[in-house]
Image (cartoon, rainbow, N blue to C red; front, side, top):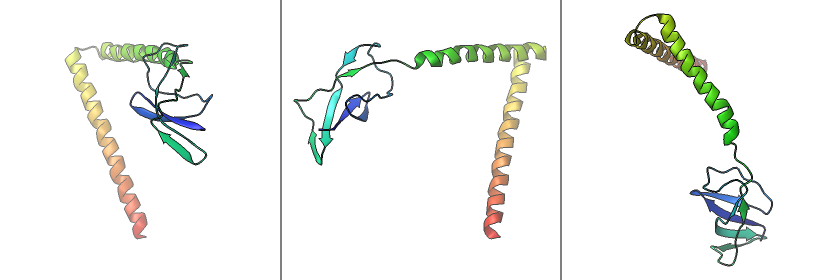
Length: 129
């Protein structure tokens, strides 16, 4: 058979020998092998459901989590320091700053709604013309 359907983390993947997959988090360490559940084998116009005699061996090659953390941690720190810096620059207590921040959020939401209304109106005018 030329491919298999396996189940990993509640999702199903079609795999072939030598193929690499990017899957959600696994409870397997990098470099270790494991055997996912084989749901089906297929190929050449034939298929076999839930084969008992076949086992797929998979190996965890790497995790992209390191690259994510490389950007997420400094980005979060920068956001936190910027938020604190703005609060310090306002020169008043947290409640006053939070009130101003709420006003800015409401103004942003109003601008988004206004943009959507104008876009909808212009698209309807174009249809009539």
